[in-house]
Each structure stands twice: as structure tokens, then as C-alpha cells.
Length: 442
Image (cartoon, rainbow, N blue to C red):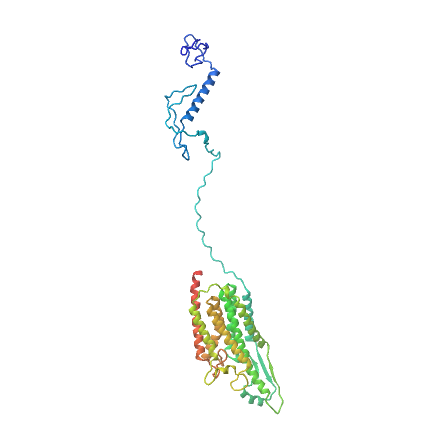
């Protein structure tokens, strides 16, 4: 059969299209029936369509070669009316003349096969409510033990009997010897001075409070224990010095000549040695508390109040040494059996008490720390009690700090009173300032 379009001769009888040009073959003389698909025709048609599609993509996709990022312009496809050459695939008109790299050099990012769950941002949790403060943690320290021991030793020293004097001398001789100050019997600290026993009780209470303060972690606790140690050393030494007065009177009585022989017995029971132990324990306690001074790092108290307070304490400590009347300052060291002389232990005791008051008060005020306030309170409170009771003459035979002034009576001098009152007032001011500074922390 011959194709009427291109004139090709090799057209099969049953073919519906020309194998050369693809034009439909006239079916005038062909029997009409079901068309039979030719495998060669299908292969050619498939190859033709793939070639057309590949050429269209490669020839019409354009972008600027110098540009960064994704393709700037969309792919421009050939117009529908452009002719497609089956053999050479003549390209149609192109709108973008700029040459670019083939699109096949860019590979799209593969999408994940499993969808990624989207996590919504969670709201910030509300601020946790402040937990109520629990009870203070009890933590005993070395100063706690020292304070408890000082309390016990002080109570024993100021409550037990400290002196016993007896004699075999006849009654008429004893009556005659009373004018010289000789007495027989048992002595207690209150028999030496009516206000010393209560002063010892004040010291024991302050030491106990300071020990509790150390357990609670308060910086003033160790200071109060140390100040109580200074007071214990000073007041106990004063009691020992005062006990030497009846001892010396008994010694003088024993040296008297008499027609009949007699004996004088002087005993120092446990209370006397406990007073000596109180002096030693007080000194050790103070030096133990010195180690705790700089553990209190808050020195925010008023330094002016501290300086004036230290000056007031110096006045209170020097007051008992200031001579009265015709006496001289050197009379503070008068030792012997003459008129106005004092026993050796009493002279030493006076210096111990005034020195302990001066060290505790001056150092405590100048520290401008809460530890220092405790030190001042422990050192000043027993002395203030002695001053107050001696000033108003409370009791049978009260004595002031360091017994009495040289050349003076049993009372206290004005300098001692003014210095003590000023020191107590400034201590109260410093304590109130410390309380106000601690208010935001509570």
C-alpha cells in the first residue's frame, strides 16, 4: 500500500498510519475492524515524547549564573504553537537569553518519611512559694562547752564555803581581840561583801545565755561567754583578796602573847579552791573567745559610738584606782600590816578586776561587731551591779569594783559612777543599732 501523504510504498495493508510520516492511511479499501496495536509504533511514540519533554526543560529553564540562592525566575516553557522537529527537536523561542547551569546540578532536599512532631513551647512554671523557715538548727561549738563549764564552776565557787577560822583561846581573850578585827566562824562570799554573791550569780547567768547563743549560731554568744569569763576572773579574785583580811586578822591574833597557850586554825574548804578555779577558768574562757572574734565578719556598727563607749569604760576602770582625800595614787600598791595597807592578794585582785573590765569593755566596743557587744555586756554587767549597790548602799556591807578607792570609804567615787553609767547607755545604743541592722534579715 502507498501513503497518500508522503508517497511511501511500504505500508502494510492493515496499518492505519504511515510508518514514515505518521499520517492516517486511507481506509477506503481496507476492511473496517478492530485496530491492532503495533509494538514498534508504541515504542517510537514513547521515545518521541520523552525527547520532546527533556528538550523543553533543558532549553527553557534559565537563571542568572552569578546569583546566589534558589532559581530567581520560573522555568519558561515553549509556546504551544512552536513546531517540534521529531528528528532534531528544533527549539522554540526562549524569553530568557541568559545561559545557566542545568537544573540537574541542583538536588532537592529529601523530605523526612516520618513527620516530625511539633513541640509547643511550654509556659514557664510559676515561681515556687517560699517554704516556711524551719526551726533554727542547734549546733553546739567549743565555746558552748566552755560556757557551760564556766557556769558550773562559777556557781560552785560563789555558793560553797570558802573559809573557816577557829581557836582554843579563852572567851575573855576573844572579846578583847574583836577590836582588832579577829573573828571566828565560817565565811561565805556574802560575808565578805553583801553584793558579791549576787554578782557571781549574774556572771553564771550571762555565761549560760552566751552558751545558748553559741548553740543558736549567734555571734554575740561567744563574746558574752568571753566577757563573762573576764568578769568571773575579776570578781572571784576580789573575793579571794577580801578573804585575806580575816586571815591576816587571825594571824595577828595568834601572834599575841598570852599567859595561856591557845591555837588558831585557818581552813580553806572547797569553795576557796573553786574560786581559784573560777579565776583560771575565766582567763582561759576569754582567750578561747578571742579565736571567735573574726568569725563575725559583720562590723557594721557605729564606730563613733564604739570609740566613746571605750572611753567611758576606761573611766569606769580607772575610777576605783583614783585616790580620795589626802591619799595618793601610789597608795594603790600599799602592802603590809600598817594603817591603810591591804593584803597582797587584795592588791593583786584589785588590779585583776580593773584590768579585766578595761580589756573587755575597750576591746568589745572597738570591735564594732556583735561579738564585741556580747563581750562588753559580759564584762560590764557584774561591775555595774557592784557600782549600783555600793552607790545606793544596798545591803549590809556592799563594795564597789576593786573594793574601794585609796583613802576613801566603802562607797564609789563619781568617776566610777559616771563612767559606768555612760558605758551602759552607749552599750544600749550600740545594741539597738545592731538590732535595727538585723531587722531585714529576720
